[in-house]
Amino acid sequence: MDLPLELLQSRIERGTILLSDSFEDIDHAKFFAVIGIYKNMIAGFFFINSRIHPIISSKPELFAMQYQLRRKDYDFLRYDSFLGANELQTRSVSSIAKSMKDGQTSIVGKLTEYDLNAVLDACRNFDLFSTKEKRQFFY
Image (cartoon, rainbow, N blue to C red; front, side, top):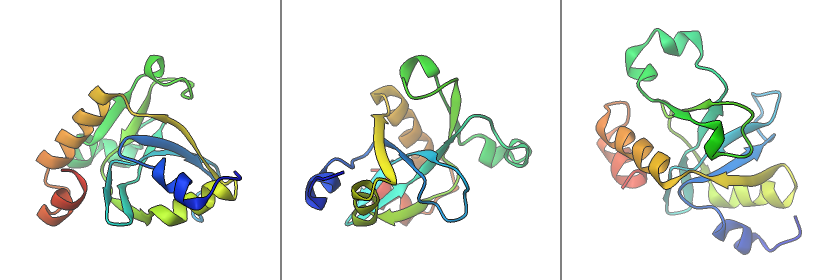
């Protein structure tokens, strides 16, 4: 993408959904959602999966953080999917913008206001994240 990095960075905000093939440990492109931004770091970085992994299904505290996204609300989804809000990952906004400029990452949509608020409420109310993480990224 031939836009300045600053402009690309300004498009990355809470609720933005991106598609990227820049993950070293994943052999295919993945959708992910930005749930929080603190200073120059995005967090949440929650992956969207077509199904819930069996290991997560067997752990109630992780299973509770799988949020269903309906295909009818998101044009880029092929079927109902799950936003896995059970692992907080962070990355710098500038590295995401650079991967957008390099063509590895693109913005594909935005969480509906309803879905974003429900995920934020879950993140704020479950014990998976520390008080500091909650304060920095989910409020």
